[in-house]
Amino acid sequence: MKEKTVSKIYAQSLLQLGNEKNQKIVDEFITLTEVINKVNHLENVLFLDVFTQDEKKAVFGDVAKKFSFSQLMTEMVNFLIDEKRIGLLPLIVKELVVLDDEMKGFLKGTIEGAEDNIDPSVIKQMTSFLKERLGKEPLLKYVKNENISAGYRVTVEDLQMDASLDYQLEKFKQSVISE
Picture 1 (cartoon, helix red, strand yellow):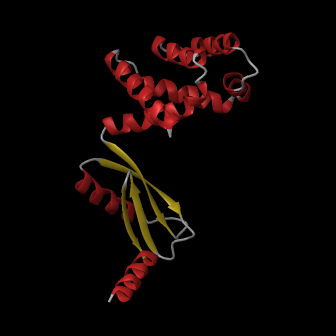
Picture 2 (cartoon, rainbow, N blue to C red):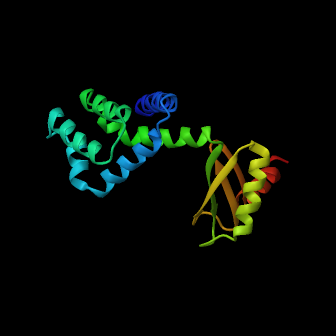
Picture 3 (cartoon, one colour):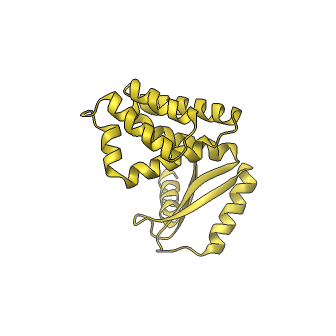
């Protein structure tokens, strides 16, 4: 939990500084994450303790030059290396994306259901309902859930709407028991 809190603070600071300097800091960190995911050796150098801080900084410096990363991003990654907090990088990137989406008025969420695919019109209806209710544009992704018999469960941040058959039966069961 502490790491998540620290990562969120770093992300908020980075986003604020990036906005002040008109830099697309989120895009840069996403690019770095994609490069780390593609190049296993880079991931090893940055995240394994067998390499010294100087080695990590030298390798990252080469990557930063190749991709023309901003000074702000380069200094942040070097800071994380110096403070032996480079392991927080994936959490920081995740928080950056979430905060950036919030600033742009987007909310990410999931629709869970029993089917392999969902009718696009259902997604459209749910999106418009949530937009009206929350005042922000939700970006919904469908996920098949084996535990749902029929219907859908929609989760956007801490809001959950459950229109699944299982939930309805459970509500009915509780109402019968309570009477």
